[in-house]
Image (tube, rainbow, N blue to C red; front, side, top):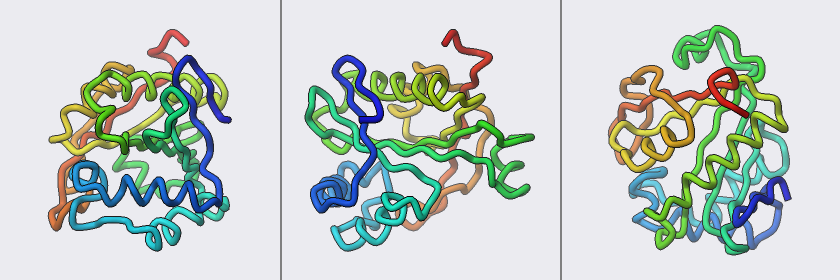
Length: 190
């Protein structure tokens, strides 16, 4: 296990069919897809394996994790050290340097766990892990501007809006604006 804190457990995804099946369950759910990937971009099992296996096998710098709440799998979180960003990406993300800067992304795939403050608990535990165990200086995330529930969750966990990223992510056939949000070690009482 990567993290065990109160009712939250986070573990790195494994190259097991059960892990891929969980992801396929969540990323074929239209309610989840409305916020993550898009309803026009479901991920059935074969697409999950194709896209997530390189991360699971460490052929990709992104570290994929499954999140459990009271020992029940409810979601996904990933993180990546951004050391090797191009100069263009550094400018996009307002990063003068990328040493010890991590990018994260997450979703709760079990929709009956939405709107209960669980996402805030998960993110808070995970952000603390990245700052304390990985010695990050900064963490960034880039939600769609209309994903108000996610933005509120991120703000509760210390993230602030840094800048608007216009037409940043393709979602259901349109390029959507996203907020670049960040939290850093200096502004936290870790």
